[in-house]
Every structure is written in C-alpha cells, then in structure tokens.
Amino acid sequence: TDGVAADNAIGVPVTTGSAVDVYSAITVKASGGDYTTIQAAIAAINGDTTPTTLLVDHGTYGAVSFGYVDNSWTIISACGADLTTIDAGGVGDALFTADSLGTTFDGFTFTGGAGRGFVTNGGSVTINSSKIHGNVGYGAQIQTTVALTDVEIYNNSGGGIITNGGSYTFT
Image (tube, rainbow, N blue to C red; front, side):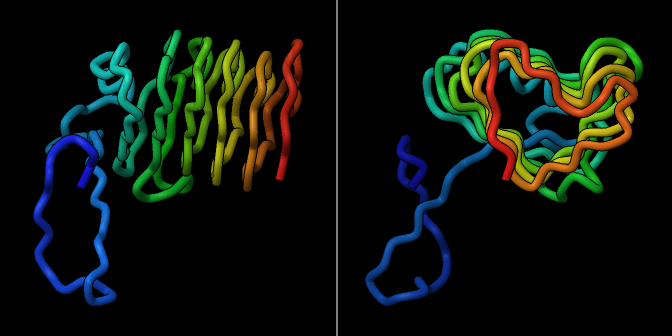
C-alpha cells in the first residue's frame, strides 16, 4: 500500500506470504501524465506534508525553482540523465532550491543556466546519477548541505562547484 489507501496488486508474491509495497507517484510527461512540467507538479504539491515522489518521463523540461519544502520530495527521472533534461534556456538557474528539507533529484541533466546549473539555499538536497554541464556560471552554487552521488560536473564556463557557507559530499 501507499500508506494512504489499500491498493490491490495482481500477481503472485515473490515469496509466499510476503507483502509488496506499491508507492504512488505523481507523473510528469509531455502528454498523458498528471502534469506536463516539473514546475507545475511542484506548485501543486507545495505545502503538502506527505513525502512525495515525482516520476518524470524522458524529455526536456524548463527551469525548476521552489522555496520552503516541509517534507521529503523525491524527483526521479524514469529514463536517466541522458534522456531527461532540466534546461534553463539561458535564463536564470536550471534548478534553484531554498529551505528544502530532504529533497532528492535523481537522473537529470541540469543545463542552460545563465547563472548556474543548480543553486541550493538552505535545507538539505541530494543529487544522484546526474550531469551538470553547459551553464554560463558555475555548475553548482552550494549554500546548504548537499550530497552528490554519481554526478558528472563539466563544461561550465564559471567552473564546477562554489560553496557559499554550504558543504557537500561527493561520491
């Protein structure tokens, strides 16, 4: 179940007598999803205190910016960084977070930032299995706690990472 309502699954459990948890996700797709942009999905769930997962289909999406998040969000690409891009289009930052508590981005390319690929300002953010390149400024400006795992940062004209009162781990 998703913790809210019981879901019935069809099929045989892997182990007799075992249970399988099925988590619901809000989908972002060019067509046929719950939302057509990541920004619209975030606007719709902002203020919800339930941990939320956004599952993003392949494609190129516009810049993402959000403020205070009082829960854990997981924003995950269904197809990985090679096929799922957040592109600022030469205006602002590809990703800007402020006071985000426990937000995870997994499997995106962050590019096209006139400022930076991504900026964190307060809270804690995790970036997994992603690429940050093609930004006019730095690849990342970190002003909070950030965990970067399997992240490639390259070809950003301002440099890779700048910290401004923040810290990061890179694995």
